[in-house]
Amino acid sequence: MKGPRGNRDGRRAGLILCALAGGLLSGACGAGVRSIPPPRPLVVFSGVRLQADSARLQEVHGWAVRLSDAVETDPSFWLITDNVPEEAYPWETIEFRGADSVRIAWEPSAADVQGAYWVYSFLHLMTRMDRMDEWFPD
Image 1 (tube, rainbow, N blue to C red):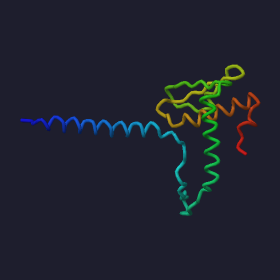
Image 2: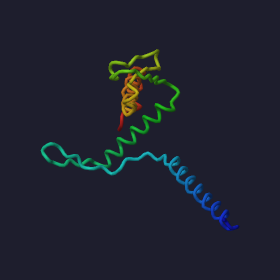
Image 3: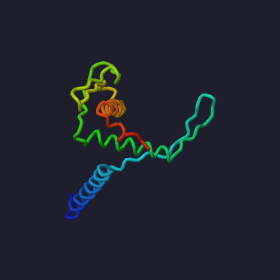
C-alpha cells in the first residue's frame, strides 16, 4: 500500500526524467555549429603517415560551408534533385533547365553523396551563369 509520500516521489521522478529528456533534446537540436574534428594522420600503403595541415582544412571547410549555405538559401538559382532507382553519376544525370536551374539525380540508398553532387552541379551552374569568381577559395 502506498503512503501519501509514494505518489509524490513518483511524480518527482517523472518530472526529473522529463527535464533531463528535454535538456538532451534541446542540446541535440541546438548543436548547429559546423566544425571539423582535429585531423588524423592518413596512413598510406608504404606505412608512411601523412599529416594534414589543420589551417588549410579549416579554410576549405569554411569555403564548403559557405557554398552549402548558398545552395540552401540563395534565391538566384535553383538546384533540382531527383532520386533514381539505379546508381547515377553526376556527369551522367546533370541537366540544365534554363539559365538559372540545374537538375541532378542520385540513388536514394547513397544519401551520403548528396553534398558532393550538390557541389558538382552548383559549380557547373555557376560556370554557366559566369559567377565562378564568387566561389573560388582565395
